Image 1 (tube, rainbow, N blue to C red):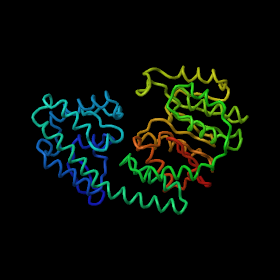
Image 2 (image 1 turned 120 degrees about the vertical axis):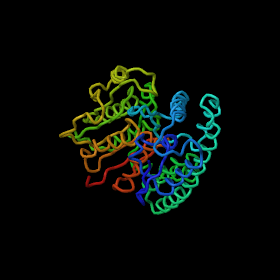
Image 3 (image 1 turned 90 degrees about the horizontal axis):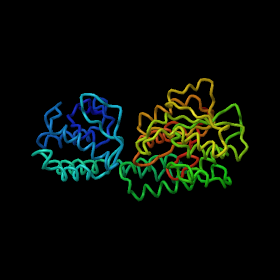
Image 4 (image 1 turned 135 degrees about the vertical axis):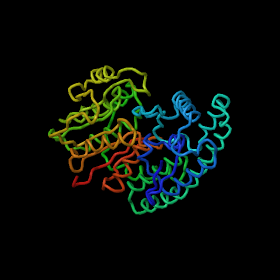
Length: 384
């Protein structure tokens, strides 16, 4: 059931809808706009086998289970792994491809196996995709108009936030890409330039951080007051690529500060399936920064930050919206006024990261001071 925020009316929405729209997997907590809820409900009513209220039919359940396996095998999206109630396959983090072709292609491949109703699945997927594009067209247009106005007024943070949100809806939107590029260029001098001859050492460490992002992290370190009473925090280290970048920046600048890096180091689905703690500690030792980095094997919110003042925090943990928000809420009370806060993977296929960044830039008074690749850097308000 989907509840409209405008009328409190409820609409019956199938689990396939929730999967297509990248829900959190908890249907009773979802809130959609009135038009979208009505449109989805109407699409359900117009296609047989999907209109009975409150029922997940066996053919649909089998289809979802098989489709989940297909998405995982093709690495199209990351499934939620914390939902295991009533045998319903959980939906996926973030949207799939924007035109719904994954469902169409899967139904085509498995048409015989999933039963007589399969003939309607391609039609249904196309209807949902067309409805989504129509409904989002208005929001995309409005967001781009506001982003342009922000850009013209020198409000580069809000402009970037709105453009990134548009890219969640349409990754190929040329106007949004142009705004992102212009905003990044406009703030390119807000952090000090540095020499980083050690980037080759970073490049030798496994991971996804781009070298331009590693350099931006080093520039963040260079912008900090060398105050040993404050600390640096990293959430999500994997095998240590970004950790090494920050540690080598501290070493080259002669900073008296240290970095704490937090990661459970359990086998990571996008990595090689191995425990990564040993890889991290080896990377620290090989780069001579063991004395500057304190690795904690834990989940981010398990770390006690009482009495800690952070001048810099880098959030690169789980990317689901709830996880990003939990990481931010955990560190926010400990950020010094004017501290630097960085987020990695701020891109269209991680809408949870973009949602948090957007809220900070549009509503919480954070300032955009750097953007490169998929790394966005903010400065906390002076009174935070």
